[in-house]
Image 1 (cartoon, rainbow, N blue to C red):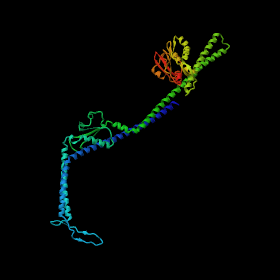
Image 2: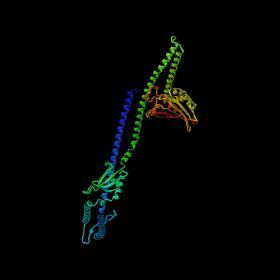
Image 3: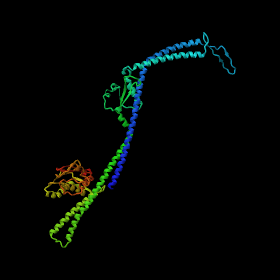
Image 4: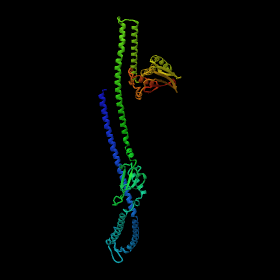
Length: 511
């Protein structure tokens, strides 16, 4: 895939995600504002209902005595009216002496009613007017008493201390009841303050000193709003958990947010993988190009040596033959190493490799490796030390691949050494595991190099040493083989001091 295509694809995905996130953020914002507005409206309605009921209770309490007086007067009046009814009965009589008979078919009698008094006669209309006037006077009198009482209440209540006008114990109950009835069941703090914000009463002493509450979370409602009084008193309520309430009210949005974040994470991982794959392909292409170039040199050298042997004009002295055979051997070894690198690369390309597993004694392999490399190390003034303390050194492994692992680590110690090499090879047992360590006094590695030392095609910086050859597959191959053998490898290194590789493998007892 071309870089331009990758960039266009990534830009398209980025723009899509940005648009999706903007829409989601806007939706969350609008939804939270709607929930907050509903919350504010419910709180203000609850405060208004509370203040109204407090004012109503005060009015009823103030008018209580007047109402009791009116009830007493009414009861007294009722007694008088009951006596009056007997008087009315004595005043009025129904004359049914003169009756008119109807026809026998109707079978009922229609009496003639006449109201009479002891002192004369009166009509029903006159009697009704008499009673209406009587009730009107009584109603007017009662209304006058109530009007005077209400006027006194309005005049005197404004001068009373607020503590006498409000029952603070009952206020808490009323406020809580109205908040719950309006759908708000949250912890709250309330206080009564004057117009300057000075606290008159509080359900919590900390409420007056709590400066952390934002003004948007504080709600106020004036007591006795219709009174024109100099003493303005307010009911003030705060909700410490308001933000949590709004967030919890949007819980249905959480799955979509999580899904967007998950998709975003997958997108980021995909972009990283795409660039890594492109980088890997580029490195692989360079590897093939370099390998092709490297193969030409030994092939050309071997071909030249072959031509020299075939050319009758070239003298076949022992020295010449020795020189030609040496060149052929060196170039053959060089070709062999290159073939190993190609095989390593093919091993990485195969998801699951096939191994010829058999029993191996690691102590013997370590001793053999030390013997092979000692001549080369000793020639440069170095030394290889072996400490074989493992009593149980029998493992199940592929002999070819595992031998390559040991040789690759020792070969790296030789490559990355700027002074006579001191290499220690050690084996020991821990529980049912076999431990193998390789410790040298080479140039060491930085922490950044240690993180990537086992990556394919990664090569450690060699500082002033410029004759190190390779393609960065050695340690990646080592790690893969060890993992395929159910083992682990770790590295400890310090710049200019040395490096230590430690391999952990299961012994045959674990199989």
